[in-house]
Image (cartoon, rainbow, N blue to C red; front, side, top):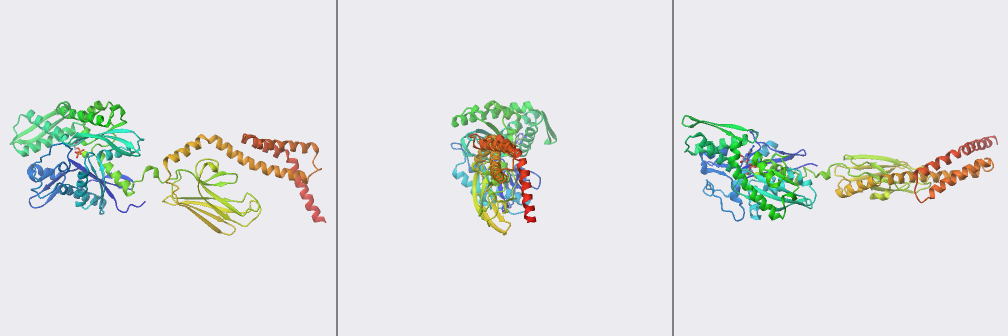
Length: 591
Ligand code: ADP
Ligand code: MG
């Protein structure tokens, strides 16, 4: 399917934001010119009107804190009952509203996407915290519009994260917890799968708790350990940046040395930090998430044991201590299969891809979920396109009339895995007329063609007259209800033995009818020419065939064996028939 205009997936985070798109079927997060996928959600409004966004704006913060806007998301939404947050800047004085501040970040993300994709984009899916109310969601939508984006959908962050973790394939009523510890906020959400979509059962959290708090606590500790004085804002900014770097390093390593040359005049700061030091500093902060998790479970009416999965979201969950605490809270190892700081963004991209049609649901994979065929003589299913064929595809077969003087051939188009036509689903039927003639004289080609959209066209051609009859099946031959497909396949397996027996039986039955008719005719023609005991042998074999045919239980093997015996018993009769035919021909010639 062609994707005319891509839809961006955007995680508009309090600390960091991400943008991505589905490219050739794969969700990808896009990097800026520096190769970074995470864009700090910071905007610097210079006095001369110049606007900078991202890492460059973060660098301005130390120098120009009152003109640097960070965590603007907090100004759009806060949890019910929480105190208003007071930033170091005055947004109003900068002539901006919270939506306009967010719009500047979104514009920057749009530009990253446009230069990476080398095309203009105008549509997006944006994520917001699960607790955002309608007004806050609308405010976010407005920010998107101010940035020149049509917001196709606002998605809850935990739902997006669950999508990224591939949990959208979870069974009905499965429940998960999404533990999201970012830079400045903590969110815990309990989700339940209902009717194929996630319902948020409960959310809890703290908008004043995150990795930044750990950075500040660690910065204080480092300064004390260095025994150096610190008084300037610049020193403070350097310390915080160094603390964050150390914290991140300690997620993977056991120790790290913070080095800040010329920290105080000519004095260098050099402090070694052990992972255990960081853990002791962070412990009380991380411990605070426990209460919120309990609260959310309580609100959802669940205990930790009712959860089927616990997923980690947010950069701070990379800390080993956080993982340990989460494991302790929920009594199970958290799922760490995704990059926690990219999960929400990735989920937004997947959602955008589904909306734009660039990512199709797995159910709609471009293969035929079930076999397609037609009914043949005796009520059997004749497969023309087997299941799991990739589309588009085309296949066909030649059929003939089974009975003499047949006026038309009725083609029933079937879908399913069962051997007998009646057990499969009829998609449609066409009647192909042809001039009457002896059995096997007609030649009808039947061709099935499925196009890229899953539409099946059946073409029947009478090869004698070259007339075509076309049937288009409007229902997609590919887009079949998942459950029905599973049921059909399960039945075909369950009934495999019976079905196969029935197919062999039907084929043998047709053969028996033919044989008996031929034997009766031959015995009549050759009356008196065949020895009595020979005739007796043939009659016994024929009546045995009739007995098996009439038996209530369809014993396909017995019928095949009886057919074989009758065939053997008539060997001499067949020779005689040929001789007689030759004699008759000779006589005609001589006379
Ligand atoms: P948000 O959702 O709040 O915008 P993120 O999910 O991007 O933020 O998380 C940002 C936080 O994650 C920051 O505090 C950052 O220091 C922290 N973080 C990022 N990587 C690591 C790491 N490897 N170890 C510890 N913390 C990390
Ligand atoms: Mg986040």
